[in-house]
Image (cartoon, rainbow, N blue to C red; front, side, top):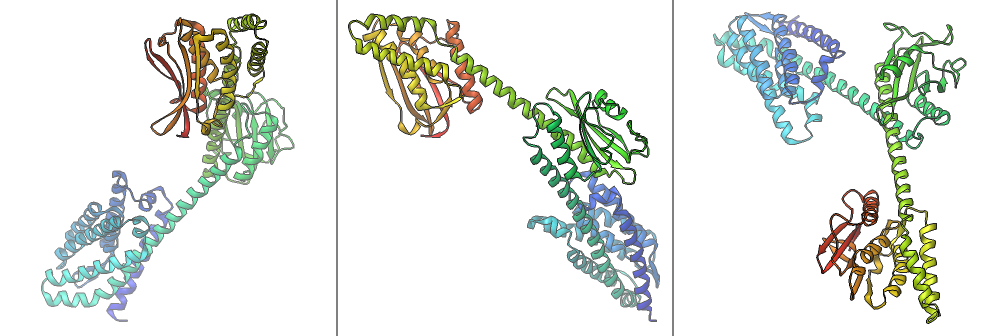
Length: 564
């Protein structure tokens, strides 16, 4: 066999050994930084140490040829630069080059310089690829690793010829080592990068699968929970979790008893039984995840010594106040391993359920608040207004029966709306109908002392508002505004545009508004309207008040999301 073929076989054996080591390394957490491009210092340091070690070992186990060493050192230098960037690549190449220089030989300087430049070359390619965009898929390309390593080895051969002396010996060396080193190192770099690429795909698939599973769980659990799990909702939750996680069994409890159990062992884990499991009691008592893997931490069923379950993960369920209100329990059989991915997912399920409960409780509290506000708003029928309305009807009934009948109709409409409108939202048209019934009565009562002007765009009449928004503002404008004037009181209800958004304005010409209301009822009425607008539209959409003393008071309602 020719010397070139002998060297080719020897280097192939060396590369095979390094690839086996790399494969074993890929099963450890140390391999993770190689599959993730990051500018963080820890990532760079790990890449530096791994590939510097590769360079040093390649030199130590290289094949001696005519006072030189044929080796696979270039793979470590080039990959260190490709994965770590220029600075890491230069550091790896320099480390490998200095180590090679200490081994001596007539190519020591040439090999030290070439190894340093190979690391820098890989780093410069890394930098160039990143500037092109979509760099992650391109940096992990085996083809790119092969091409860059091939050119790096060509550079090394050229430097040996330029630097090593005597030239005749250098030329003879290059003729013998060029083909084996070009082929083995280029193919080895490509295979090493292929291994990193496969590991990267596997990480992404696990992450994607976990994310998809979490999303499906979240979607399926939406709407299942109330403010607290009961037996019906717990059974649905347990079924969903078992279907998605494929664990042996799933149990749901509250603080004291089992609400649901599905899967292996359901013949003796009974619904409604008092909790006796030490792991479950510990999770509730200490408000933390408890894991009994069946190996380091034994799992023992509290119901039957023949239970087929061998491990359990108990995750507390918390309410909005972080108080434990139950647990979700995932089980595996005695012949199955409780995988770490299932453990992580189980802990995530606990967080998902807790978040859903928090959202549900918040929504329920918001509904209760809205109902309370609506009841308070309905209760704001001023007894003085009712007394004055009846007195006004009594005063006009003899001289103008038609006016009296109209007032009775308006009062009836006003009271019917106040007492029977149960929905929390109404249209602007309905709000104006309610306000107009009130205004007709007040206009007859004050006669020439009060005039009403209403100019609201028809396009806004279908806009939704919280019920009892407009009438309290109109009542406030009269009671604390125009009623204080001896003559010429005016109330205007109109729409306008501010910064491209429609607004509804209730304005009086008294200008008597004070930021600190003088009357409790005035403050209560305005506060209720302001609070309900914020709950309906958002915190930035409360009432706005503009006032110029003795001239006007404007109370403004911004119709959120309605362009003018």
